[in-house]
Image (tube, rainbow, N blue to C red):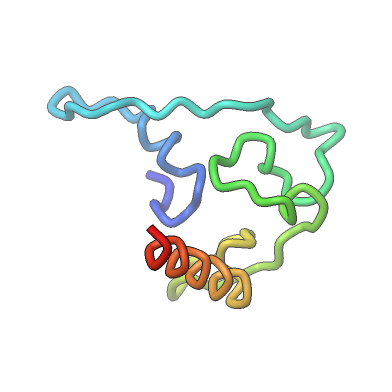
Length: 95
C-alpha cells in the first residue's frame, strides 16, 4: 500500500479493493505524465491534488520522512511547510 504521507497516495489506496470498507472514492484528475516527455518541475504535478505553482517549474528535492522512507515533494520542504502552516493559521484567525 502506498504511504499515506504522499499527496497522491490516497487516490492509489482507494484502488485497493476492500469489501468491508464504505468510503467515498477519490478520483485522480489531470493528465498522466509522459515517461518519454515528462513535464517540467515535479513529474507528478499534473495529477497532484496539492500542486503549488512551484511544483510546475521546480523539481523537488529528496526528503526523509521515516527511517527508510523518502519523498520527492515540495510539501516536505521545511520552509514551504512553515509558509503553509502560517497561511493556515492566518486563515483561521481571519474567519
